[in-house]
Length: 79
Image (cartoon, rainbow, N blue to C red; front, side, top):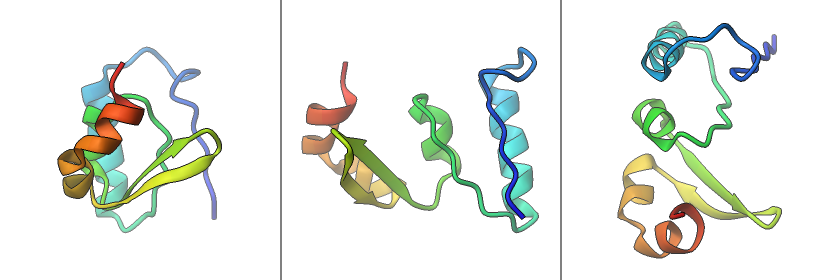
């Protein structure tokens, strides 16, 4: 089964609450595809990370590898 949830359309809840809910779903064995701009949430619960730029994948790896990849941060994630 596939469930979708738009966090932008959800009731106003904190990012901490969203993170907790996602962690509970993950603990129940559900796979989650999270498309999120708030990296603090995404990297805390993710087991894999992908960064897209200009319609293509520019990074694929673990959250730890993404945190350590200075080039990807500089070119794609810093504002």
